[in-house]
Every structure is written in C-alpha cells, then in structure tokens.
Amino acid sequence: MKKELDLNKTVAELVEEFPEFQQAMAEIGFKEITNPMVLNVMGRVMTVPKGVAIKGMKLEDVVRELEARGFTIKQDEAAAAHACSSCGTHEAQPHVHGEGGCGCTHAAATAGAVDGEATERAAVLKGFLQRLSAGESLETVRKDFIKGFASVSAEEISAAEQQLIEGGTPIHEVQKLCDVHSALFHGHIGGTAPAADAAPEVQDLPDGHPLTVLNLENKGLSELLDRLKTALEANDVSGLSRGLGELHAIYSHYGKKESLLMTLLYRYGVTGPSGVMWGVDDEIKAELRALMKSFGDGISGEEERYSAFFQRIRDMIYKEEKILFPLTLRFFSEEDWLMIYRDMPEFGIAFIKDAPKWAAGDAYVAEAEAKERKMIASGKVRLSTGEIGCKELEAILNLLPVDITYIDKDEMLRFFSNPGQVFARPRIALGSKVYNCHPANIVPIIEQLVADFKAKKRDRMEIYRYIKGKPVGVRYLAIYDENGEYTGAVELVEDFSEALAQFGEKK
Image (cartoon, rainbow, N blue to C red; front, side, top):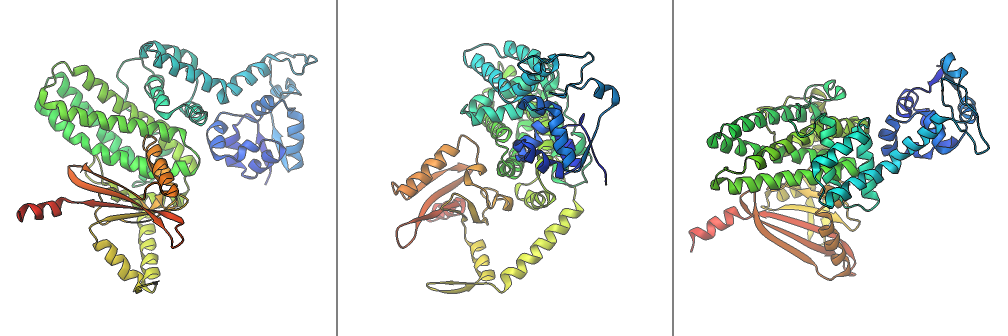
C-alpha cells in the first residue's frame, strides 16, 4: 500500500490514516505526538509544516526523514513551486531568507499564532480571568474575548484551560471562563443560546450507545427548560414549581457524565475540561437547591436569577454536545464504551421515559456477567478465622446494610460493594486514583485525610448528614497491617432511615 502523506491535512488526520506516522514523527523529533492529549487536541489543528516552523526545523529535512521511512509526500504543483525550503510555507510570492533564518511573513505569523496556542493563548485567557477577578463586567470581557478568539475551536480553548490548571491556576478561577467562552460558541452575546444539536460524530453512533442516551437526555432537558422559561414569563408559580421538581433529574444526568466520562478522561490525562466542567456542574446543583429552598418566599424580584440559572444549564448542554462528547470519542476505546454502557443503569435515566438498548452493549454485559459467575463459583477466600466461598462472600456483602469501598495504599480504587446505593459506584472507576473520582473542590479534603492516615495523625473521619433526604452516615477508616504500616482505607456508607424508624417505635 502506498503511504502518501497530504501535508494539508492535520497531524491527527495523518495518524488516523497511517498509524505508523505517529512513531515516525516521534523519531524525527516530534515526541509530543505520543501524548494522547496533544495528539487529540492540538493535533486536530496542527499540520506538519506548522509544526516544523514552530520547532525551527527545515521541512525538506523532515520530508527526507519521512521518505526514508517509506512515506511519499503529496503536494499540489502550484504550492510546491513556492514552498519555502526552510519552513515549508506556501506563499503567493517568493521570499528571501535573512541571516537569522527564514524571514517569510507566513513563518513569522505561524510561529507566533500556533505557538500562542500553547503559551500565549493561556496567558491571554489568564488575563481575562484577572479582569473578571478585578471586578470588570462579564459583558465587557465577553466582547474582548470574542474579538480575540473568534476563530478558535472549543477544543483549543479546552487545551488552554488545561495548561492554566497545570500552571497552577485554581480550577474555580478557570471555571469563570465557562460563562465567557460559551457566548463565543453560541454565536451570541447575552441572548438566548440556540439548542445544541449533537456533534456529527455522535449522530453517527448506534442507538443505545451511551452518548446517544446522554444526547436524548439533553434534548429532554432542553424541552423542560423551554417549559420553565414559559412558566417564568407567565408568572406561573405552579408550573415553575413542577418544573423545578423535574429538574432534580439533572443529578442523574450529571452523575453519568461525571462518574463515567470525566473520571475516565482523567485516566487518559485529559484533566482540564473535566475539572472545569465538574466544578460548574456543582455550582448548578447548588443553585438548584438554593432556588428550591427559597421558592416558598415567592419568585417576585427573582426573575433575572431564574433566567440566568436556566441559561447556565443550556450553556452546559452546549459544552457537553460540542466539547465533552466529541472529546471522549477521540480517547475512549470500544471496550471503554461497553463498560460505560454496563454502568449506566446505576445512575438511572433523566428527562426521557426509556433509554434505548445497544445490541453490542447488551451482548457484552451478558458475556461479562457469565464470566464473573463462573469465576466466583469455585473461588474461595482463606482467612485467619476460616474459609468461605467467593460466591457466598459476595452474597453476604450484598446483604449488609452498608456500602463498602476500599482504596489501597496508593490511593487507587480497588473494590466496592454497593447494596444500599446511597452513591452510585461504577465498575469503570476501579483502578482509578480516588482523586479522579471527585470534583476538584473535594480533592484537597481527600488528600489531607489520606496524608493524616499515613502519618497516623488520625485513623478515622465520620460524617453524618442528610443526603437526598435520607439520614446517612459516611465513615472513613484507616487500615494498618500487623506491623503498623498503612495499607489503605475503607469507606462505609449507611442509610439510617430504617434504624431511626425502629428507635422511634420503641421509645
């Protein structure tokens, strides 16, 4: 097969066409191409000539190396006639190289603009954040944002957000950009965002695929927001109350997105978009709780607050459809999607009556469950106080009125039993760092707790509060071996509703 490279295509497109091109470019000097985040985000906008110009290399040298590895280069004759031998730029007019190297205008522009995608763009975004923090109006910053970023894709800004976070900018600061750049992607300033249609790559997926289900939920959510907007404008308090009640299903939708998609993206090294979006989700849920709590006081004078809240949810729908979902398709394997499909029922469905079935997913689930039954049927666990079959042990764990989660000494999630289902526990999270299973604002608390366990400053933490209207106890216990070495921690979660009811009857 002839391996002909079209240098007008992006690096990511060339890797998809010729997988061996990735290793070839890494050997030539483009080691960044082996980083999945770089390939799937920056690789979608970068071409070989642009990359060569940024690195200060000569295109003819790179071409020679590629040809030595069995590739041929496709270039249209007109462009090739004016190709700069140093930078590969195709210019309408010949140009001259000075002593300092290539002096072509395109090379200078390319080096500045494309390199800015990695450094300057992040600096500019940070400047927007500083202006917002200094009290400048959101509308003014939006206008300047659109002027400077009108041709920038959502993925590029997500990459810049990730760079900001890796550079030390707190995630809660980067979250402020969400409200700024949503205006750009919606093509509006201050108006109502259009409905977010699924990205083309999502539309092509089979019925029942996890992303098609999430897309259907977004459509149902959009329809609910339309009804809420109508009720608000008509001062229909009863309709608004019903709609806010229905909006609680957003916990299910966001739960699937956060625990199944974002947690797995972390494993692939994509932390920026996930961390920022998760934080905004939490703000939306907090505002929903606040609005429900204050609803009895009436909505007079709160119209703008409700409108802004509904708009923020619409903005999140848009970000899911145009940024998050396409991004997951570029990273997740078919096996990942099958595992996600198996986990989705744990979170329930939202804003739709029934979720369509995915034939491939159902076949995978049936096969996986059969293998697991066979595996535990003959397995046994020998302990200091006796022996028990794996099948019987699992049955006992499922009878206990407590959800158990074990995290090993390296903070990896290794095991859970979940009969009470106070919190959904997806199988796909097994093997992930525990920090990647929680929003950014919770991570410092977990880090401190683990550090205290390891230093033996404390060996437990207990929290008792109402969760989803139920009295719930959450206990974190440190585990030490016979030598006193830390070996991990266990989380015990219990719904005390039935126990409290029994005490109430027997005063």
